Image (cartoon, rainbow, N blue to C red; front, side):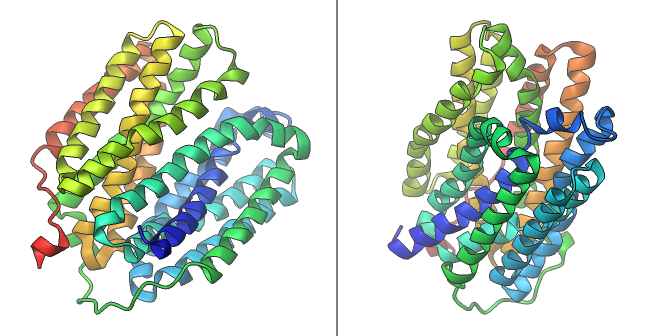
Amino acid sequence: MNSSELRSTLALAGIFGLRMLGLFLLLPVFSLHAKDLPGGQNALWVGLALGIFNIVQAFFHIPLGTLSDRIGRKPVVLWGLSLFIAGAFIAASRDDLLWIAIGRGLMGAGAISAAVSAWVADLTREQVRTAAMAIVGGSIGLSFAMSLVIATPIYRAIGLDGMFLLLAGLGFVGFLVAWLLVPNPPKQIRAAPQPLRQIFFRPELMRLNVGVFVLNATQVAMFLVVPRLLVNAGLPLDDHWKVYFPVVVISFFLMLPGIIYGEKKKQWRRVLLTSVVILLLAQVLFLQAHSLALIVLALLVYFVGFNLLEALQPSMVSRWAKDEKGAALGIYNTTQSVGLFAGAAIGGLLMQYSGYLSVFIGGSVLIILWLIIAWPMRNVPSAQAAS
């Protein structure tokens, strides 16, 4: 990447990671805090207050992504960050489950993931786009790992209200970065916009949407079980971050050769299919993981495949979508949110009625189906070949 591409990508990855931090930072501490609030003994209300961020977000990915194709990426991102900041202030204003849920919902309404990903695609050349998406995807993994490390100390220092105020402050920093530091993409002559239905049913995009659904459904379901496996292997809950953080960081470096190969050889399809096989291998390893070393190995293998797909799939969506990047990535991110919800629901049912190992068996079945669906996918044509 040249300096302009790298600077813009890092800035947008920071904004993307900030939104994910708004989701992840509360996960380790929210249920503990909520039990002392009115209604906090009702697990359903606690779950809704925590999960409303994703539920509301799912409804706004497509409208805001499509709008960014029409009026530009920067106005949509600034509007979304404004909602994020306002929601964080509302959630911090009262220590009440209802108002926390309202604030979290408003934070989720600023669904800018599609606009940010499309903005990255607009500002990077094709030959470095997957690397740029890898940085953005890496911000998700780092946000998750950081949350596990810093959430409890921050909560003990400033409380839940202080955490929301911290998120509001970080949101304001992200607003200034998007407004002042990230350039507008060059003006493009766009063809007449395609109907959303036509974008949705485009075969290559549908395969990628199936992929992101399975990827996130299996991830959430898997993390219903992994903490139990670590505890059973002798690692206390407070020490789990000592596994997650290094595994995420090391996996990010291990997946770089796959990105370099895909870009250099223009073999994105081959890298995608290999990544899906890596996910399947991780599920099989989890079925045999009865020691801490095997669990760590399975996690490392999993995150190599996960990070590759988090980088590769949005990049491929932006290439296949061409002028309709925002709309296509909006559909993609909506499917991602649905996958997160479905993974939690289905994983919980499997654990309740069939035991925790059934989660990995179910994940293996979904990944095999994904592999079958993805197999006929064509390789993305390069801009030079297309012209």
